[in-house]
Length: 200
Image (tube, helix red, strand yellow):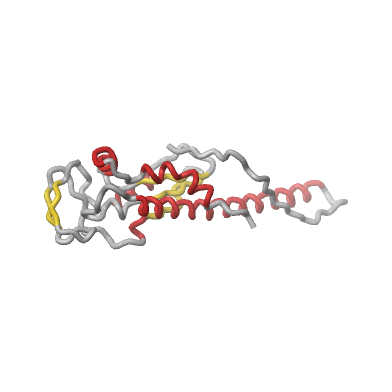
């Protein structure tokens, strides 16, 4: 789990002016103030949501660009980078690299399954034997199902979760010293803050 805590925050505020009835009853003024505070909260919440949507897209785009040390055979790993955005613990937004790329050639290989692809996802003619047990489905579907079922620890606020939809992503990093998600994880804080713009 990545927790990003800013080192400094610049003071930002929203000023809401509402003419109140000075001589009126306090209940009316309280309800006007409550309505103003509710509106301010909605404005801030919408701003943060739109900002975090951009962060999700930037994280996924960075992962695709940072891929190294492995090639795409079926296309399931490269098309399954995904981010889920959660509000108050509820899944509310999904972005996947597969939304912008050619679809995988076939479902994931599973352990001991052999396939020869001519060409494979990267345009090479080659065969490959599966090294890990998989669900035998498409990576993007796996990512979406995982993110829909994931329950973040944050029940009050926002959370971003990023994943790939292939069971062998860790294997690629450990065995081949490749990069699937590690580089993006290490840059996540910078990606988060580079997308932060002042509220207008």
